[in-house]
Length: 131
Image (tube, rainbow, N blue to C red; front, side):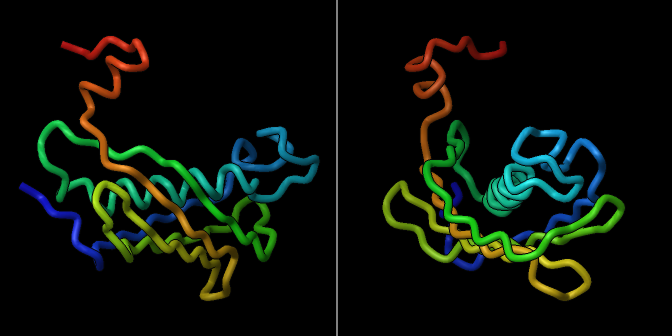
């Protein structure tokens, strides 16, 4: 049975492609890494950081994020997101995510997730579970 203790962390790389840009996702009209794509990368890191520590039948859902997108990243460049679980308060998990390109800051993200029972969550929203 996992505990999701603070300090759990993971890193994830993303090479920016056309489909990752503000122009492609509709958050702007420039061919640089979109803030929504950046946030999705951060959330994926947070999910992976705790994946092996979750009790069976539990998952986490994102509930809040604060994004400080500092520097544009063009197509072809690679960013690395570093996610760390910094707090566990009941069902609430608090993360810090730093995103860098070549050691320079691209973004700072604070993210909150909540632990839920996967089956009850899906039942509540009317989504059938896979057999």
